[in-house]
Image (cartoon, rainbow, N blue to C red; front, side):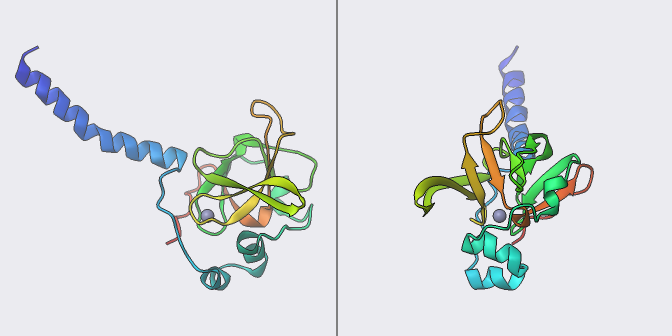
Length: 169
Ligand SMILES: [Zn+2]
């Protein structure tokens, strides 16, 4: 291979990189820029029940979410900022009365420890807007053994084949 051809291939490879990167970020959802709003702004945008859970760390009553019975293929996105958080492939019936997943989409949620019930629990929230989603427990099914116990009101379901909502700005 002569040098000219080699450098041409190198340039082509370089120009393809951003395209590949864009494809990956769309599929796996990390790297969306953070969305910062005040509680007052969120309260004006969201139904009261969703606001209470997402930004006042409320917990919906068990068994009240229609998403408990949602069995279709699709994506579960943050009800506040629309970031995709879970795929239906990781949803399972935990019997708790809350929508449960054994895995979040890569980079979709962040965690911290809370002590609201005295003993420590792992709280998790949307990595983009910070909206509270639920808690992670270690009694989930394989392959992760994790149970993401999610408030249904903090999620919205998008059936496979329908466009995902635009990220809220
Ligand atoms: Zn969010």
